[in-house]
Length: 289
Image (spheres, rainbow, N blue to C red):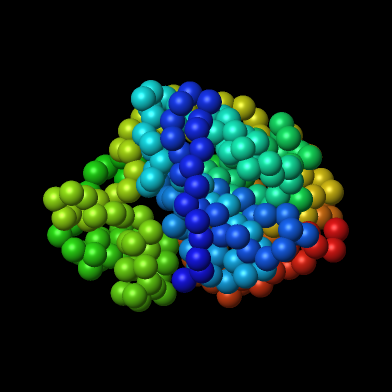
């Protein structure tokens, strides 16, 4: 596994937050800022780091309430605008003026907010299975499981539970892959049980009417014009429709590419052959831009 250092920073409201820093190659390339999905954490990008960390620096934060970052005092701060404020403080502390944003699901929403407010930060962007319009079927499915505490007696039990719940999203996965996903999503608690590695209260904003999005994000696509942008979509995705993904490319223009990942739902995990090839194309465009 690629080596990294653990770093910490303080949010504007006083939470101690954690990130992984994969040092990468020289300083001539912008770092990759890897922003995970709603229930995910920095470990989600281990496959990407394993492949890229020799040549690129990867900064992989745990959002508040996830993994090694502190839990929020007020669960209504588990929203994209607050995450953006947290990440802005991290970037300032690290003196990182420009980067490639790699945003999965929620991380992609944060990336869109960055484009809207600090376009100059973005040397490139990957929006992984998320867009300005989110399908109600996907949102409804997410609401069914987020915040439901689970515990298992072993890692294999956790992996089997993941398989049972997500076999339609990753139909080709074998036990080894489900185990690897379990190690990224769960942790051992003090009682030796395998539990989900996030604050169950992250679900609370989703229960508020309009909690997912309260503004029209389509105008934000214009902010990506001229920036190398990759839109990844799982072929089986119930959150990002094919029509939405194609419209995103049209709105952004010639610097955007759409890659559809066959036989995968929401979200692609970035180690699929089609994802690997598309990410390599994006980074080549960043370097040549």
